[in-house]
Length: 223
Image 1 (spheres, rainbow, N blue to C red):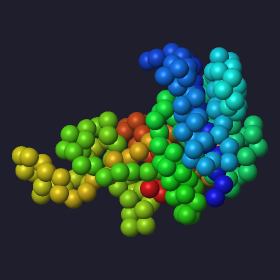
Image 2 (image 1 turned 180 degrees about the vertical axis):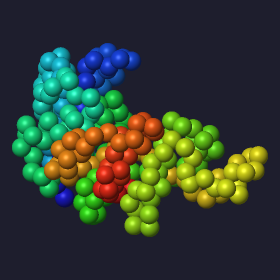
Image 3 (image 1 turned 45 degrees about the vertical axis):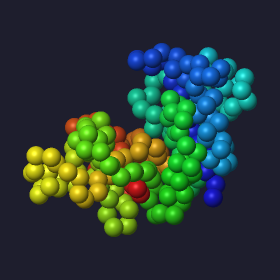
Image 4 (image 1 turned 90 degrees about the vertical axis):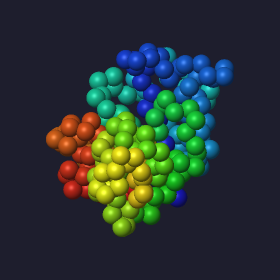
């Protein structure tokens, strides 16, 4: 199964400028992410950046760079530019791995690509069962519910599904499984351009979850 990993790596971070080049054990952070992606068995790993300092660092460790516009409002827009510039075929699978995840397991990268390849969806992601009550009620832990075939029905910062009988109790014990979304995505390359040309949806703006745009416009996300 053929797939490409794209790693968006912006230099100008509001919280930590220069984050892709932060030194971790003698190597820039982006190099750690690149090496993890290479171990996933991707055909190609491309680092998408808008900064020459990042580009130079990537070239020094032998990575592949695609220079992109500094004006993108989201990482998905940057992916769309990479697909266009690199002439990636519409049916090819692209996995988006964030440039600030130096410990991302290669097996996770491979799994999300495999999930998409085995489905008829244009996009796929991953989830894991929630085991802690703190996580279940934490709005920073995004929850997802899926149908019987594994297609997302909704993503939310709220606790979904709401277990009426058990959560009514004071201890709010988790009896029925809840799923936490893992923020890694695989796309069919041709779908990325469709996605970025849709107007933002009301639900994604309420929840601050960009993936809700896909469901809003009636497309599928395999989980």
